Length: 138
Image 1 (cartoon, rainbow, N blue to C red):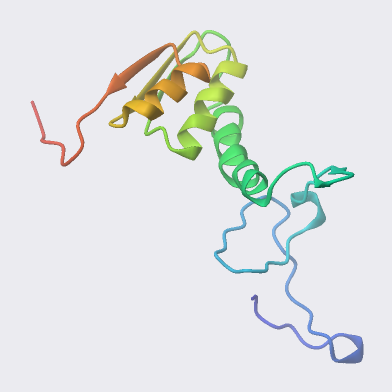
Image 2 (image 1 turned 180 degrees about the vertical axis):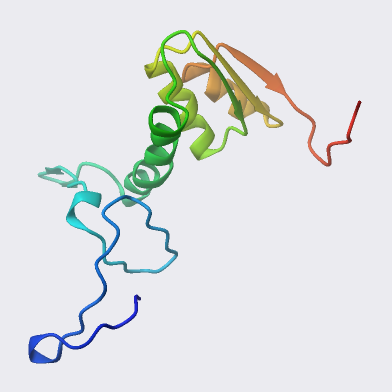
């Protein structure tokens, strides 16, 4: 957890104010987060509308990919985007770049199945790379 800043009423522990952004990283089984970092999962009669696994991908890779495109790179319509690696985050970057109407979206990976998925999610071009070390070329 965080550093203690004294005790609250009834012996509870108070923690320092959490950063109000999504700059939360943890591999813990439980984590305290600000309310604005939480998204309710809709319920159905049979239970949650999303599995824990699907919610975890959306909550991590989805936000990272979307934030990379719209907040960090500020991709605009007509932009050219290159995605190196088509794992969970990379595929979410491909999707977000397509939503941003990038004119060219290049997806690079050494796994052909990931490239097929990237194409289905909006990549305009896919490039199969070689697995292993990359040599410096002049």
